Image (cartoon, rainbow, N blue to C red; front, side):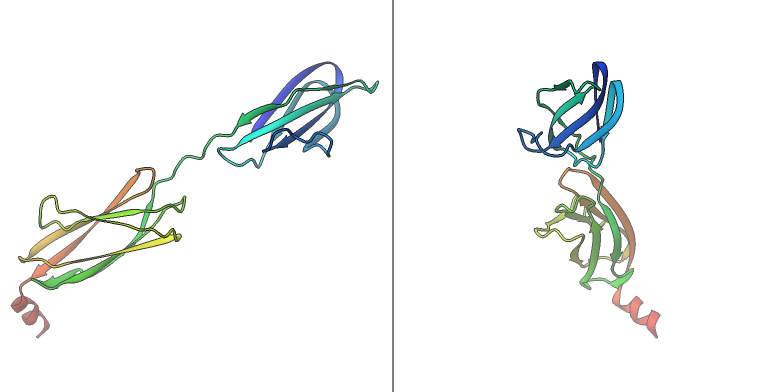
Length: 188
C-alpha cells in the first residue's frame, strides 16, 4: 500500500489517478475519489503490486469549482521479503545393508516458486556433498539421491535445500547400516 497526502489552501475534494504507465490518464475516472471537503488530504492506495513503479496525478476542486491539478509523481513499492524454502518430507529407508544402494526422495517448497538446489551429506565421508539443481519450477519440487554405505554403523544423513536468494534450510534423518548377515538374522 501507499499513502498519498497533500494540502490545499481551501476546502476541496480529493481525486487520485494511479497507473503503472506514464503518463497517467487523468481524463478517465479517478482511481480514488473523495467528495469530503478538506484542506489536508490523505488517500491510502491498497492492493498494489510489490516492487512496482506507480505514477499518480492528483486533483482537488473547491465549492466554487476552482480546481488544482498536480504534476505527475511516481513512487516504487517495496519488494516482498523472500521467505526461505521448506522441506516438506524425506522418504527413504531407515535401515539397509552394507553395499546396498538405496534411494532417498526429498520434497521441498519454495514460497516464491523459484528453482531450488539440493545437497546431501551422507555422514560417512567428510565433505561429500552432492548437488542437484532443478530447472522446472513446480510448487513442490522433488530430488532423489542414491547411496550405499561401505561399513556398518549408525549414520546421520543431512539434506540441504537452497533457494535462488541463497536462503538455506536443512533436516537430518538417521540410518542404520548392518552387515548382510545381521539383516538375515534379524529377518529369520
